[in-house]
Length: 397
Image (cartoon, rainbow, N blue to C red):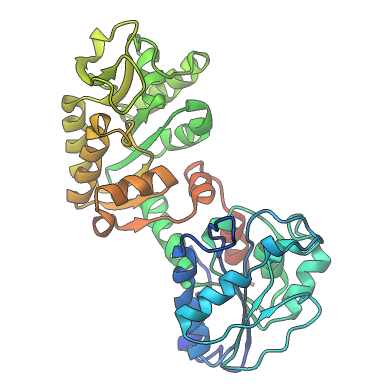
């Protein structure tokens, strides 16, 4: 992907004395008293902000927080707690500026936070007049919020259209590089793991990947639907019988390319969905009518692990079983350990996937962990994200 990198502008001293507008993702969880309960996104934003300050820029940063009503300020929607926490991390006071679209007073070497951008009327609809106002505030626009890269809003897309320079910050650039490496120029074989409760929520992803990957591993409720499509009994397991033809079409598309969707040969079942349910390993052909399939079995796990260890590139979205229950976590753990042991370039994304990575402590063995849930899924669907599209267009203008 061809795009301008903010790090390159700083290295060439092109940010010195410039007004730099950074769109970050500071949408952090808070408790009922407005206290931040998890600050990973704030911490992740610091390198870009520090890079701009070190380059001698006048720095403005904004983000959305929650789901405010445009034009209607409520204290609960304010970025004040975020500005306070960011100031603690950067060991400096960071003023919070309200009603900022008509002008911001900030000097080189200073940083200010601009109040919740989604309070501005026209933000979500990418209003051109609002976007032009934002662009007029700066000499350089920096998009560093991958979690919003799939949305064309005034502070993510419109401003990039009209700013003098539009570039990617270090977080977004890393996502763009990792996605290109995994999907645009993958080292083969390319293996994708797509798991979740429903085929319907991931059908377009499965269809898109069926034309690209060498092995498509399905897990969770999605695997149950594929097992049903292959003529296996799945008992009372979660599945979508109405999508059997779609599952068969994905299998056929893969087969036509000499690729494969491995169907589980053994599974872990229970009679009830509970952490203390008795776990029973069964051959896939021996599932009873009152069984719930809650994980893949050891033989299937070993077969999939061998594929992953031989892969050139791995894309992982979703655990393959109910890994929150220890009795039904061995499949997901086996997959996680195989990815960690593989020499493949691995990229993982999605909330449950990140939870599994954390549970098994393999963060350092996964080459890239994507922070954007919806944006990551849209990339897997084969969509061009608005942020990627506009930054590539501006790089050529």
